[in-house]
Length: 179
Image 1: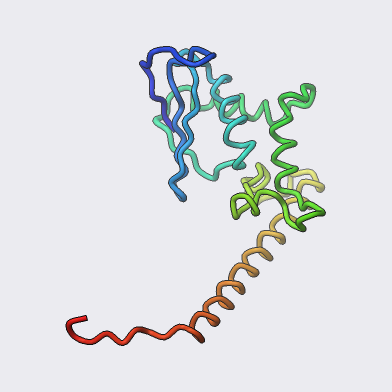
Image 2 (image 1 turned 90 degrees about the horizontal axis):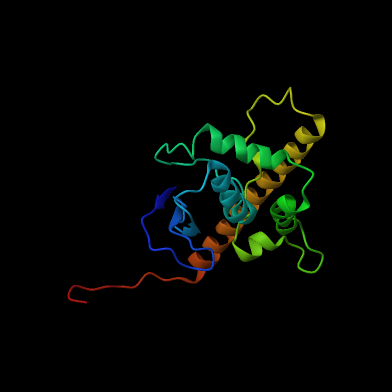
């Protein structure tokens, strides 16, 4: 994550910068219009509304240690995760929950149908020691882990099945010198 700043103000919000967020795994990028003067809270809200609500919580974030990304940023983000009095603030979490829940029509949740994967939840980042965590959170984490393990097994089985089908019908070309 980093900013591009020093831009001529533009758009309906008169943005003069944008936050760049790159997914290291799939190499997708998000450009989020903002202001150079934005606070850590503004940045946390931008991250919450545009990344966590659509992709889930990343396992790792790499930044240039800008004060907006250090403890104040995460304190604000955690405050947003625990804030329960403002339904507007919670809409992205509801959206994430809906998009990762099984739909009766398709039999699947929208996220893997749209993206091919389910986003991570904050609970996925909990430390191994779950003794101090409320039992229902641990139950949810255990259930989620079992679901992820089952999905991984299904993916491995599907890959093996497809490999066997390919191997049965595929013939290596017989190249000769000069081909």
